[in-house]
Image (tube, rainbow, N blue to C red):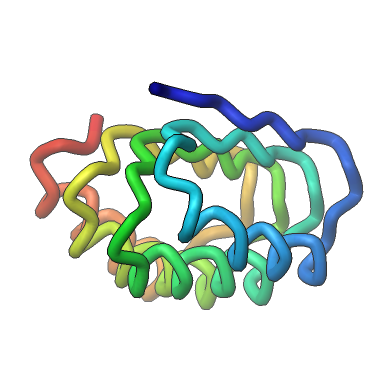
Length: 117
């Protein structure tokens, strides 16, 4: 069973992201998470990425993180997760403030994971 969860435009912020991080790792049926435009920032995205990296049950294949004020630190956290993800095929990070070392690490993780589009 595949399930998409769309929580876009809900003003979740970093605290909401932390709550999502707790739930997404144990819900194997969620394959797509759309959480764009929620002001998650580096802290929120970092919490989600860290939880997914440690999860042994997540089957998440697609995540939409557009327009969430993600900077270099958030990109580095995403890169650490994407580099080891066995299920991820699409990670949308458009309209964020990703630059520098974060951009370098994120692009290397995406290029190194042949499943990601």
